Amino acid sequence: MKKTLRNLITFSLLLMGISANAQNRYLDEVFTDVKITDSVVFAQNVSIEPMLINLSPALMPIYCDIYEPVGDTLTNRPVIIVSHTGSFLPPVANGQPTGSIKDSSIVEQCNRWAKKGYVAVAMGNRLGWNPLSTDQNVRTSTLLQAAYRGIQDAKAMVRYMRMTEDNGNPYGINPNKIVLGGQGTGAYISLGYATLDDESKLYLPKFIDQSNPQIPIPYVIPVYMGNIDGTDMTYAPMLDSNGIPMVDTSTGVIIPLLDSTSPLNIPNNPTYSNDINLAFNMGGALADISWLEAGDIPIVSFHCEKDQYAPIDTGDVIVPTTGELVVEVMGSRTVQHYSNLYGNNDVFLNAGFSDAITNQANINNDNYEGLYVFKTPSPSTTPNAYGEDYEEQGSPWDWWDNTTYGLLAEAINGIPGVTSPGYFEANALLDNPDMSSSKGKTYIDTIQGYLNPRIYVALNLGNASSTHNVIDYSTNIYPNPAKHNIMIENINFTINSIDIYNVTGQLVMSEYVNSMNTVLNISDLEKGIYLLDIKSNDSSIKRKIIIE
Image 1 (spheres, one colour):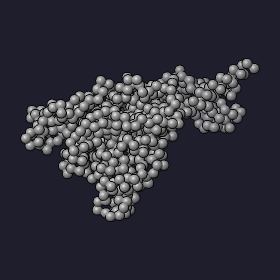
Image 2: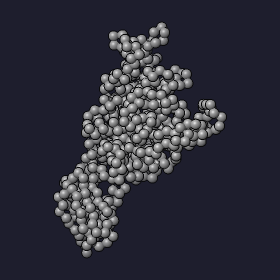
Image 3: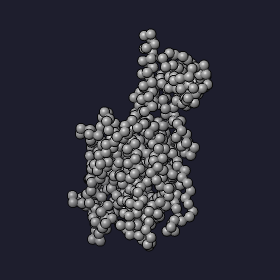
């Protein structure tokens, strides 16, 4: 009697452990409520955004929203930072209804991560460039400068979070487990952050204005824009009598004014580390594939195959507002080709993911682990009411209140060249005609279903050893429920043995396997719930099965 009771208690505890695993922190939503601390100033820096309304550059705050799970007792939580889209311009001015930390897709993802136990951060960045210039050099230089400032701002964001941990840790973070990602324009920031580690990478021929062959000028000059990390004080250039920046003819470098009244970059928390553990991108692209090197952090990429603004392979960035070309970039498929080639994503390969979402990804990703390619529907060939042609989808995870956007756009710009209401609403739907909350959330289901397990493995967030977690993830049991036979397989490790216990804790079946897969005949077992103890590579995992 005592033995039976002891076995029942043991089995109950094991089932409790399985139940906990079924609702696994960081993989599943284990919290119901989220606390949002909004409009947190994480940095102040000089922005050219005022130039959009004919004002001078000015020192401006940069904001973020911070999401935390309510009722959480942990104080060492990993951090996921995500940067929004928007073409480095405000909504409406960018020709889009999106472009802020309040974008629906940003809010949705941050809420989901917080409910899973993370601290999630929606990060803003400095805006401003000149997409309307007829001079390609101006378009290219101002866009690259905007992206460079965005990378500096993201590094300031990471340093800010580490600073808070050192000053009372109000957000309860683990400063050694930080992930950075971005959507659209924010993806340019995250990919640049993950790969731009050497100033020399800024001086490739395509990043240099060679309109004057005698004095080629780099589009991005750290001496006055600040170093890659944004941790030094820099100043506006010295101007000649015609108001043109003065250049050192021997070096081709613009001469800084060194005037305390004219800073161009101000360091924010410069003593803290910029290191992150993983980057992800939803769309966007990398400025040049030479930036990506062996030993870089793992990257997870999501991309619509026919995204017309940011190519999935190699191609030109196109300005959404004008359709003008800017600069050649490398998209997610090229990024993942080299990330896999260099072994940077081996942590994902070693985990041996074989879930349904991974299997779906592998159909279209050319066997590049870390890449999810979305096949979106072909656009309609029937123009909208204003004679505009529909475009390929590039961000189907976005949604917005189209009526509100239309009214705002009309209030700011009027309706150029048309008299009927609804022009801006129609224009916004050209590359997302069936935009809706349910559609966007469905895409986010897939994105987080693919991304979150990879974050989990890269950050080693399991309670057991990393080997245990890898074995757990790469072990599959099917069918479940079962009647006659079950297949047990692990695509990375040899399974040494399998023990099956009934609800009383009694060992009812034991198999020596010494293989990566096996079929067990369970037809002699009675209907009910059983516990499998699977031993592999000096680790043991528990799985529940149901026999019908």
